[in-house]
Length: 531
Ligand code: NOJ
Image: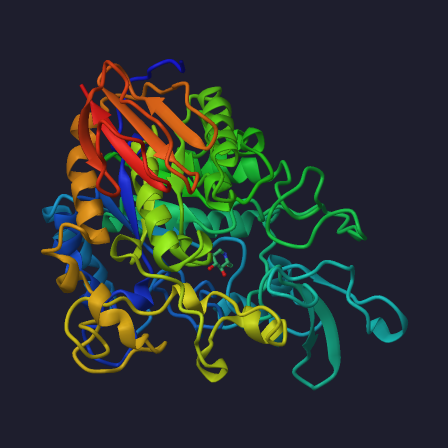
């Protein structure tokens, strides 16, 4: 049994809904979701029963990476709205009782950011270049990149600048796309500028920030070759020269001091792909960040032991620093979990069971737009519709993340299914999405939406505090209690298992599929029991 802790702050057990801004709702009909569209649809999220929304970046951006290439951190992309639209969205959300988190992208800017433009235009030795990681190339003529680091999106992590006069210049580091140059976080000027960015949005009333690539800001100053020492990708391994370096923690201590100057229980959530919950806990020490995504569950295969290990690891290590876990199954970077769990009927059954598991665990839960509709990954996008730089940088070897970013269906029989006023949507929607629209599911008690509505409506009352304890269960089954009055049982196996409800929680509260309380528990099924 893990000790109970007081839940003093809203984010400790909140359900937070990720809005992928360009794919949620399009008010002006240009096919791109926008802030006015989001605002008009917030009542549906209040009805769903979530506590907060997280908005992906809406800043001016050339959109080389879906807005994670920011040209100006203190403005709104005109295609998405204006600063006044942000203010209106915040006001409407707060009126509805919803908090709003926004994305901050500190690891890199866009090449269109004023800083990078000045650096590029400034010529050799320009002080503006010191805000980024410019280095001379290796080999004759400096023709080779300064080291062997690879971009997360494929290809080298360095691109050579062409000077204004057309001559080859130094190379700049970009852990992501070549249009996303990494900032040099050893520079006080960079640190101070981001204090201002945080303050700008906190003053406007945002309730917190999701920190993009939180584990990437600090680099080993020697910029050593990696060789074969670490796997390519965004998941940090200990000793890696550009992930999870100790100096990132100085930044978060500083950010904590900034946010603590504001009332209203504002919060940080770090996106940090780390090899272990033990390393993640270091970001959550009392003077650093409040929360971080725990991706272990998301990355685990559909397997009871793997799920159990992910849950145990997170709870144990985070409790050691007094932090609360956050759980997530899908986001805008990952293949949607319904598809990861097998797709079709079995994927749907498993996704339904996983939803009840996610929402019964202690801590906060993040939902990704469309999972409450049971949207699958869109796998058949035509190549010329694909936008994710991963597709281009891997020469099509990796499809990229567009398949989870297709604009979501709201109502009606024809595309764009209420996403916008007309048919336009920046990624094409599948023909069969009419039946997955929110309106089509709203009155159907067997729908995915209904399950999420019920679970969210009952979660708070049923679950009580932070207490958590595993219960004995046969292989393939996870069972746990939350205090004395609630238990959750999930059969991850495909076959039915004999199961009787725990004696202190004998009453069926909710199940992912119909259950006979006296009979065996079907495969891929979850049940909430209460006293
Ligand atoms: C993580 C974001 O979630 C992803 O969409 C983005 O491409 C990278 N960080 C780079 O900013």
